[in-house]
Length: 124
Image (cartoon, rainbow, N blue to C red; front, side):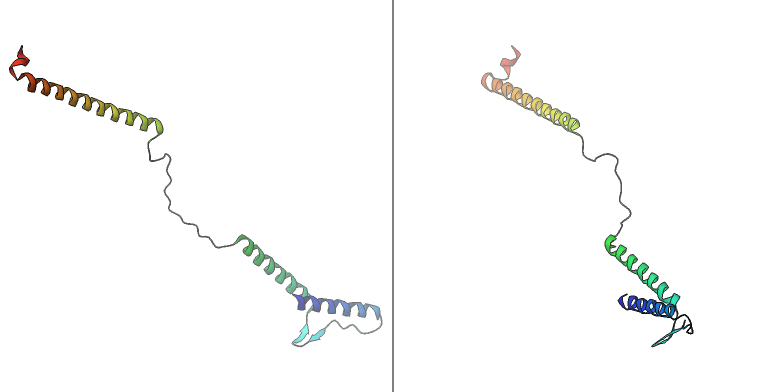
């Protein structure tokens, strides 16, 4: 870009010098190392380089270091039960355990009375 800017400055300086010499022949062709230099091409190349530089800066700032993965399953509700549902389930489980414990205690009492008095005493 700096060399292109230097070429633009040199070309503009040449145009200014030609404007100061009104009677001289116009040199609208400037010769460079690789042949004739087209003045329009100098400025259009500058615009093309600027656009490419802007595109590169934008790509750098946005970054392309991520990959979009498609195919995730979306869920409308959570898989685990809610707090209320879990509380009722725990309460039911504890009630069942309490009834089983009460039944075992009653069976133990019954067996203790049978052991103490025998089978015949329960029919009295």
